[in-house]
Image 1 (cartoon, rainbow, N blue to C red):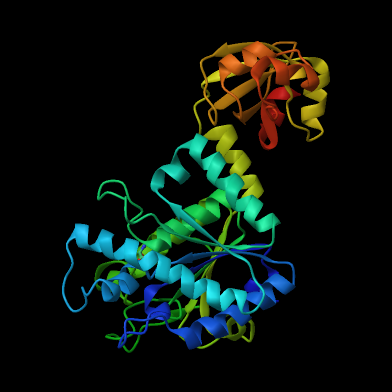
Image 2: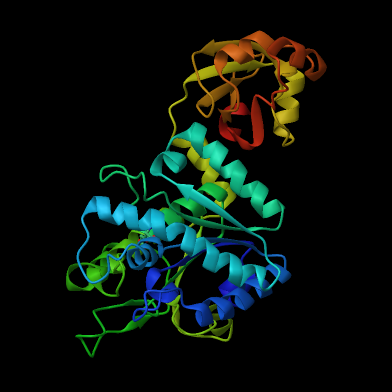
Length: 376
Ligand code: GLU
């Protein structure tokens, strides 16, 4: 089966060169319509899809009369803000034409790097997917600053894939994958169909003159950087030609591409990240019943918490300690330490009057990593 047909949740990055007609500066309607049919097929098979779409700057240039010259940063941001609505209109027309719902999500790096915001952005994307809609993501270019931007949508797409636990990142571009050299200059350049690990040899291939291969802002180096982020999150990356009319159908029919493998699954990578890479900001002590519930895959509720230590905030990593003093798990807190301190030991029905709202679990099962070796 093609990796695309096997994907549970795919993040697909579409570059400006595919979406925007170079001669008119307007959306490439024919390509969009064919691509919408492609996406409808994936959705019809029950696969989740998130699009990461460029094209705001390119479409806004034309609208603001800024074509045919180099733009400074403020002009680029102005063009992006004029072009983003045009970009969404093009997506809406194409996707609604095949019965798919569309939703715009504009992100800045804080939304994927700051954990509290990450949890919010993730919840929005998950809800959109549960509603059957296709989120169309772009960087919030109008407000992004030079120091604080993803800079290219290959990397943004990889961060989105990591955030939602996607199992496939598809980078549709103007090259059909990785080569051992720049195929435009080097006739001996070899196409690589499969890469099991991004090692020094692969890095070297995408470096130097080859780094900029391909149009758009992302050359091979940014594609590899994106693939590296995705691989660390347990997500495979597929680099393929996007210009063909139905690139996804072409891929399923065996079109040439490069598939970069990931060493683990998204779920395992996420739990390993929680267990190993984050510095815990606090501690909650759980009673024996809660520890047993956690071990069987349930969330940690306030009712099972007997004590709280540290000044953790929402989204921070915390340690879960059992009544015997052993650390049994780590997770991301959905409530801050002062909230947990106020409601610990209480049943859900008692909590709402106390806080004025009904909070979720202290740690959701999805964000909890069981520390098996330490808990035996
Ligand atoms: N966010 C930019 C845009 O929509 C594109 C950045 C990129 O393609 O890497 O125009």
